[in-house]
Length: 321
Image (cartoon, rainbow, N blue to C red; front, top):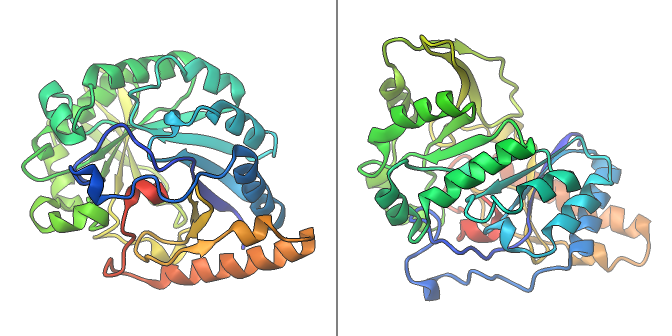
């Protein structure tokens, strides 16, 4: 197995409670999960995967990764492993004052959640977030050189589905890329998925507007996002992507694994099976650690045969999405 993409959830904590990620009542979600591993332990797990299976990309996720105080050190130590690409997914609320430092430590780009451009609706969907803070984070990331910035939009019927055109134009104006995600019936989203899900075809139809030229870009089966180059009459360009996990499943070729902040391994969001990585850290020799890691990784990849979400993970916040 080669060319892994590792989603490293550095914390399950988040200061927001987005409606598709966390329940409104904090008591209904054990948001913290188990005890967070030290940064050195998380880097050791990534290093072991890289040495044996070659990791081509690490994405730092959460929860909200910027809540972890040692994140800059963790990024710097991971960059020292020689992995080709280091990225981060964030809600952007805390990004503005940290963007330059994270870039200096080795982070290369960021994905930022931006589900709406309406300040009131932003607060409702995120349950407490500030649109202005996220926009400030986007601007700071651009100045720091964390490009291309990708804006993640989870499309929700009756909430923000009427805004997809405006969000595409925002991407054209700012030079960011934008990606529209089908809602997955995972965690708390499963309880309202049937009434809020919007499929890829409908999203794409809503984006068909006069004056926009669409060119499909090459797609690799190992990628989850299908991208198009979009150009408007003013000559501005962006990349618009679609992650359609429900209508266009990509399980068969997915190369992603998820490491949780407390040392769990998940192979797929459509499967609730968790494998404990602490035995790898506790192995008496590198050879034993490699044997244990190979066994766990093979088991995690077998989970990718699941094609529906009947046994999906219970909480997105704990596995990094």
